[in-house]
Length: 276
Image (cartoon, rainbow, N blue to C red; front, side):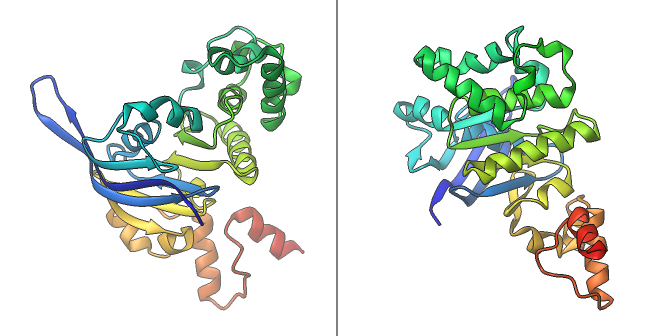
């Protein structure tokens, strides 16, 4: 597989007003494959959001390199091309909506890129279908639920036709129904080939990814498949992280001799297998 995002000894420092240096990312290296679904997890203050902003070039490395499709994000000439390819969806949907009509909000990004109006119409329709919100296209965003608003924010990113979307805690402010809606959209977009990076503190969300990176105080402590990461609950607890309940249940069933297919990774999949 082709590496789409590659960090090479990436370090990022914040400079406080008093001149003190706070190291948010500390000499990390990793790869994200094109078309993959990568989850980045860790406690508050672990550096997750700082890393996300480096990927989208809202920040650039203090030292080391971050490459997006081979382009060095520290090179000013690559700035707009990287941002065109890598979209970002943030935690609070209300902070990402700029228009009083849903479809106008989705069109905002392409309009600012100078995209032809006919092409904008096509992109907006595609994005609405991608997040299953076409019936709300003429609604006012403030009348929607939190989950629906976040789906509109995601549609705005999709309309930019990025190759990669970074989701920075997109479900943190949503109720369980809204979380399910947004995660379903994220998985569908990844199924369409969009390279997906999900920053989350919900362990069950990370378990649905292809690849998991565990950050702690700016350092990568674990890096591997969900099965590899969550098969070491003691290590996760050392990092103040929990093992998802369904993962623990599946592990205990296997330990007790229940033959479960390797592809069963969630409670829903376990339920379907048991009831079939």
